[in-house]
Each structure stands twice: as C-alpha cells, then as structure tokens.
Length: 126
Image 1: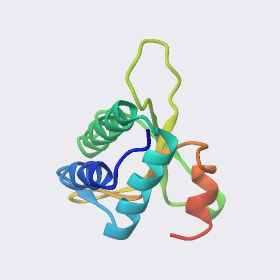
Image 2 (image 1 turned 135 degrees about the vertical axis):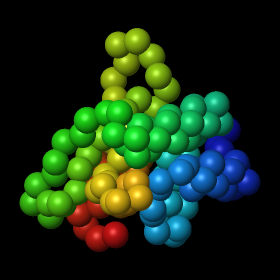
Image 3 (image 1 turned 90 degrees about the vertical axis):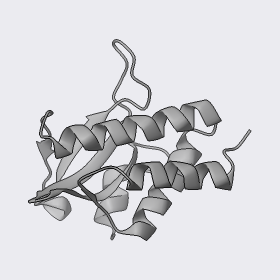
C-alpha cells in the first residue's frame, strides 16, 4: 500500500523541524515525496524519515564525516546513511549538503538510486 499524502506531510514536517537544518521548503517536500516512492511501505518510509532526521542531526553537530563532491556539485558534501539502521546493512540513502554557521544547508536527500540517481537529480538543478 502506498504511503498516504498526510503521512508524507507528517514526514516532511518531522524532517523540517530538525534543529540546524536550512532547506528550501518545496525541495524538502519533493524529497520527502520521493522518499515515499522509494519506500512505499509505511513503516519503511517512517523509518527512512527518522533516519534522515538522525543523519541531519549528526551532520549539524559534526559527529560524522562526509565526502566532498566534485564537478557540478563542487562545494557540496555527501553523507551516506541507512534508511533503517541495521548491522552490516548498506547505506542506501544520501544527503547533499554544505555546512553553514548555524548548521547545514541541505540541497537534497533521498534514496541513492530510486526513483533516479540522487546526484544526477541534484546536479540537474535544484
């Protein structure tokens, strides 16, 4: 069963309320919608939202390391995380961001390849 629009909005509001996050509201809502497309089961989607909030919090507090991006995304960094934390699980989600004095500015987040490559989507214009 697909994730409902109200649940997507709940997820977007949860992510938007993360302290230290700066992100364009339309981009945040779009990325949350695409997160629901990548994880169409409600419990998986909600786990992905919670993991995104946790990942943003870790980036804001500088508790984790990230990778600098090149080419069309030069000046931005990428952080890889699991949509559902599991021992030995693959980091299937990404956040493209840059640090700011007050936290981080997020260009985009989501599954690394569903519905399309995250880096290609970000580089094509957001």
